[in-house]
Image (cartoon, rainbow, N blue to C red):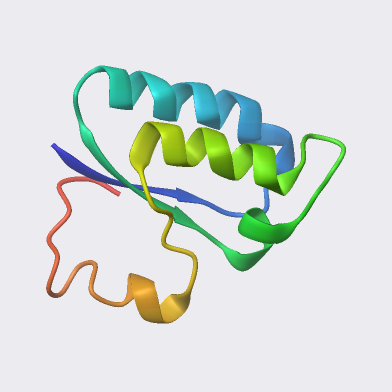
Length: 82
């Protein structure tokens, strides 16, 4: 299954979300990670942005983090799940 996995600035949920992402990846799903600007760049008490990005990349590969890069999803690139 091709899954677009989107994360926004709800930083308090990141740890649970990352665990879910890692389970999906381990189950063999193809993941396209998508992060909002704030989720991609902001260090918080819940973690440094660089560390969060590394976990996301390890589970899903390169992160889509701009509106322009996300535009193909839905039209040209069909996701099974977002």
